[in-house]
Amino acid sequence: MPELFRLYGFLFMFFSHEHEPIHVHVIGNDAEAKFSWNGNQFVLERARNVKNNDLRKIKKAITVNSDIIVKRWNELFG
Image 1 (cartoon, one colour):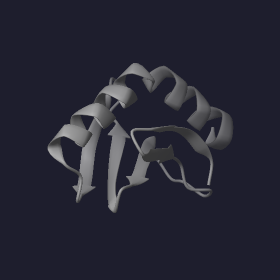
Image 2 (cartoon, rainbow, N blue to C red):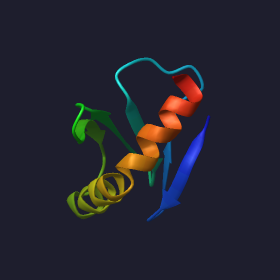
Image 3 (tube, one colour):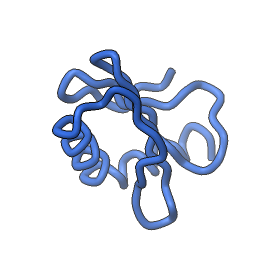
Image 4 (cartoon, rainbow, N blue to C red):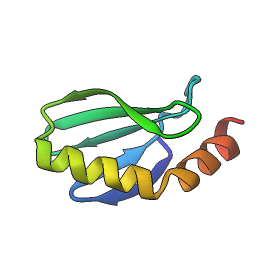
């Protein structure tokens, strides 16, 4: 499981054998979310048990780090 970073008690990561499109999994606090790259930005694909306040923080972290996430994806799976 390639780990990208940890913030707010959440792990931002890829699974070992990923598939297109580029996406990032966020796991923690008995919650999970998945954001997919639409070619321009990461968009929430699904969320389970994520509080709205946490979801806003997660989205901001992904937005701020989107270049790093895409670059890391391409290094691992490109």
